Image (cartoon, rainbow over all chains, first blue to last red; front, side, top):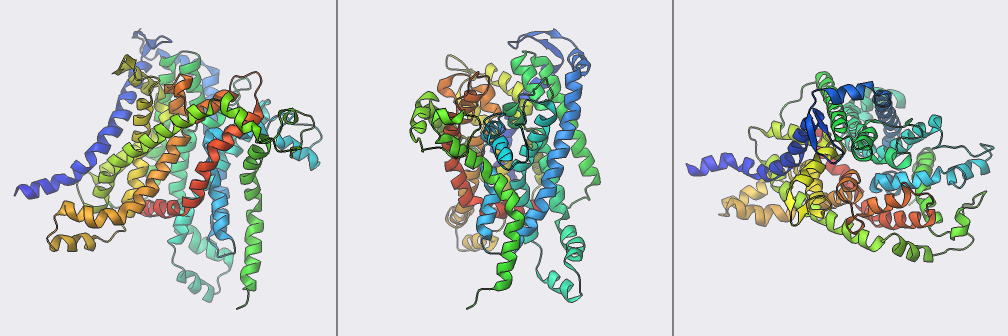
Length: 294
Length: 284
């Protein structure tokens, strides 16, 4: 008898260590952020008293914050959209049987292994005005006459960062798509070819629908990662020039650890959480209900 | 045997189509390497050139001292290894439960893991910092202590580790364990003798990816670690660049190259396991 009741508890006993650790590291900071966001907090974390929604009011009165909200949406849309647009064809190519496919796969995956911080540092140097290799190469090829001030002008800095964001997100996304493609049985293509379907028809009628769940999943995970992506912008421009590349995470970090306003930074965290929650809710609404897998 | 001419043509087309991406992927590595071996006086000349006039390997030695690379390397190793061990230790039982038992609350736990993935460390840094400042440890608190970074990394990697390992564990046939029970093995012994040896590769692969995640992380160490003696590579190297009036780019590139190359090689060798593991997890 005891054996059976123990047996029913076993899965929970197995899960508890990881559950407890994750809960502790996530719940206390979360509680603390909610707490700080409704208090006036000094630079050194000293509470000065309850202030209601004052921190939030200050945020929404700050034009830099409002601009950062919009820029975060563009950043997420640009990077995720660009990543999916690049990754689908790349995954389709890497799924073909060709000479050197192993090497090609490894090469495409390579940016994943490099820390975002290091990637950002290298690109910051590569996009250097006078000595950077991007300007040098473009000038050698005759594509530009004078060096472009990539990271020092607001029109260029943000698009450049979006491109770097796409580059580092492609490997993960291609990985998901390759997994999806490998689960597609090969004989349905055989059948389609016998029925006289063209390559484009095969893609539209067979590959794309089968890849659909994987594309959805890649979009969801990428939206979460990209929305929260901190090192690229922080290292390349620190939100500058003149606040023209701040997204919410970099704005949050600057408020909290540079300008010494933890209360307002906590409020930014909460705004971001609400945005992520809205996104997840919308996603779950449009996602067809999946059964509880065993 | 003849060379398959259709395959050859297909290979050419595939490589041609991939070539722009390959160039962009290799570009930063070329920049890193060629800047790292340039003599200092050739880094800042206008117009700049790609190739150095000679390879100055001494840049690496100079950088090692100037950037306190050795200390940061040791710190990165300590933090990443400890975080990996902790994350894997708590994730193995959870992954086993997810792969082997149907139970109430499984869906809930999966959702919980998804939520932990959503709450990226950087969203919580304000709270994490307060948490570390609140806990008494030795003389002071947990700010500027490796243990705080280690525990945070372990916690944030649980979702990935459970996901990867449970999807692999599910592919290990249950019959093997069951037949061991029938032969009089206890459940625990069956796990030890039959399941673990088969699951070991999945654990090793997951551990290596967790290690790489920890090795590459930035926001948490950047916030929690204050003193040079405790900084890890990502933060130490960023400090060479951020807020400096003059940046010794040849040394910075030497440092990024040294910090990146071992991990890239390890990753290149293991990436095919990742395709399999994530795909299995995704369709579940």
